[in-house]
Length: 113
Image 1 (tube, rainbow, N blue to C red):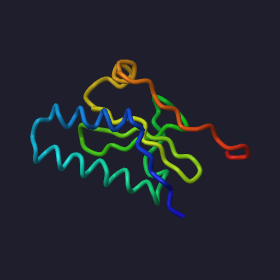
Image 2: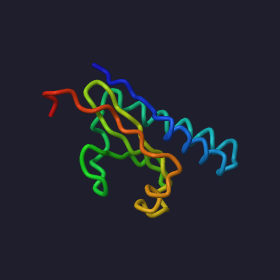
Image 3: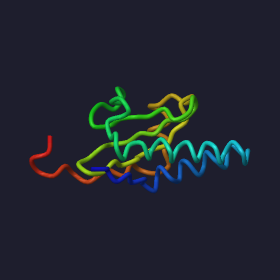
């Protein structure tokens, strides 16, 4: 059964900011298409990306382009895209400097591992 992929507003805002910064219409459209395509893969493969070592479980990541990564959390029936970050920036600094707090996914239902 496919999982529902849910982009948080923070992740969408970060993607929009990066597309504006890129300022290349062709490249921006391709980056946007790639981001949504890769996120869409999580519908059927929610564990596709490895656990993100800097955050630990349940956080996972997908490098969708040499310069960009998605940070996400799979939950029963859903996958929450929490962030869209540039890979060249030191992750800990980028995570702390985010303008928006991390939108936490809902708590795990009782009995879920």
